[in-house]
Every structure is written in C-alpha cells, then in structure tokens.
Image (cartoon, rainbow, N blue to C red):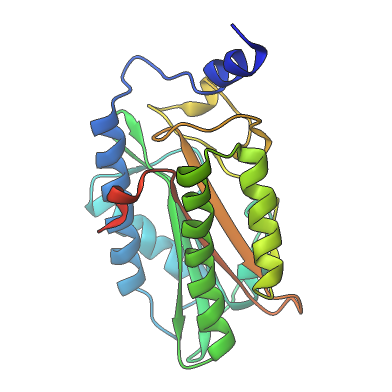
Length: 231
C-alpha cells in the first residue's frame, strides 16, 4: 500500500452508520433549509434575530444543529472568518448582502451548506454572491475532469478568485463530512489533502472577500458529481 493511498484511506474513514443515501438525504434537507431560512430574512432585521429565525426553521424541519453554530451574517460581518465573532447588532439594509452557514444533522448523517443572498441592486454585491457559487462549481469541475488533489483544487480556487477580482479566504479550507461525528474520524482540511478526494466525503468551501474589506460571499456544498446539482 502506498503512503498516498494510506493517507487517503485514513482521511476518508467513515463510521458504522455511513451510507450514500443517508448523506444525500442530509444534503437535500440542508439545501432546503437554507432556502427556507433565506425566505425568512428581510431588511430591517438584526443579525442575532436572523440566527434565531434560522434555528426555528431547523427545529421545524426536525434537523439538529451539530458541530458548528448556526450562522447568518449581514453586511460587514460577511467578511469575517467563521471562527471570528460577528460585530453585534448589525442590521440588514435595503441594499445589502448576507449569507447562511448551517451544519444540521439528519438522523445519523451530517449535512453542511452555505449560500449568499442580496437585497437591492448593488452590482458588486450581486456579482460577489454569484461568483462564490460559480467558483465552487468551477473548482468542482476540475476535480471531476482531472482528478486533482485537495491541495491543487484550493490553489486553483485562489488563482481564479484573484482573476475574478476577489480575495479567497483560506481560513475556510474545506473539511470532511460523514455519519456524525466526522471529527472522530478525521479533522484535516480539504485544502491540505494531497490526494484526489472521494465523492460523498468532503465539503468544498468558497469564501470570497472584497479586496477593500466591505463585504464577502460564501458558498459551500458537498463535493459530488455533476448529476447531483440539478436541484
């Protein structure tokens, strides 16, 4: 067994409850919850109230928050790395940007997802939100077409982000998902994986920031083949 194969086997271990169907069900419910939360958010809301609204949506869907807090970030807080606390009391404006980042558990399986939304007609904010999602799919297609390692995928993402006029926040370097809890199996990042990551095992994260520090946009989803992104 080569060292590379051994590293991949170790990094991609799963627990006894793991199943592809279970992971896809958790992903589907996560994407659905993101859309439901986004519909509940309106200008004039305080960020802390939006977080509580997001928790209410998850409770109503019988989804349990798991290994990281529910996050909804408004305006200037969208530039912050996830481990940085939001500036309190930020109100969503009529011309503004926000993102949602949730990691709910469905039965034994972990979901994780994020997306960015805008209000108003600010073209830069709208482009940043769109570019975060487009860059996610661009990077994912390099994985599909060329079998690149996690290291190479994030090097490519950083280069493309610069070409698009943004900064890529490498403090969000992708991570494992599995039957809960993945942290008992592997805590390393996708960006440090020196092998081709397998489908149904990894979350690809893209966090773009305006070079002037005014706002950012976030998109994350499970690393999967093209056929899974029709929804």
